[in-house]
Length: 293
Image (cartoon, rainbow, N blue to C red; front, side, top):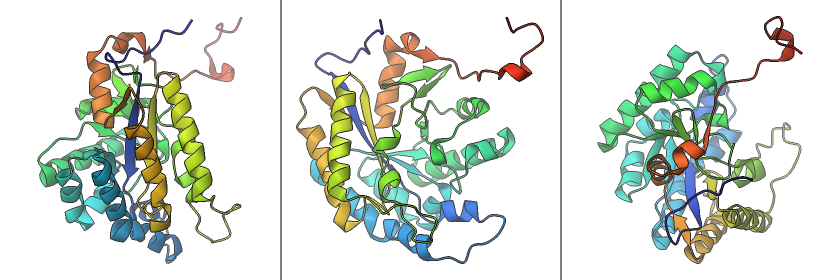
């Protein structure tokens, strides 16, 4: 029988509101070998740091909630006001690459340089060292955790192996859920590559609230992921409002940052109970001779 996750007294579950604050960086990474001249998705993404981020910050301020914001270095350096604005409202700032790089497309040395650059940028601009990392596209490799540990980062928020925090060897994982990522429902470039239209905001509100309640009902941590260029749109603001309204009105629900959640897990009796290996299984055709029965 699965052992329940142990929360502090009078707490039954946790809720984290996280923001992936990327604009041009994903298109720059995708176009690193051949420059793209397309402005369609680019202008959609730029909306996020022209208007969308301010909509989200205002809503968070109104509900008195601190978010965790994962920011690529490119966006931080091209908008010197960005990290300052996030830090001013006491939002946690985590790493999200330099150009939104997909970790599985890098080697350990390249990834180490990217993490080092991210740490240096956040410290220089805010005076505070980041504790966490979120991988663009939520893709990780076993060696990537070694890089995070060597850089002094304590947690990752890219994978989904439990309903609540857990450890992958020595790194704490704050689990995400694909159905709680707005890009799955709202991203639409209109280039012909899309095979569906964006869902209505009302449909996503209902789905997300149902999922949060289900995770919380099992004593887990509901971690929602929004983007300023998607949920930050004025006509989608009610998604953020509905989530925060739910969190504020739910008894026994701990509203916290990902860093708060990781720090609690590291200091709690859950640490060794929920520790998993990041070792990958070998396919049978490359197993050493004699290991197949």
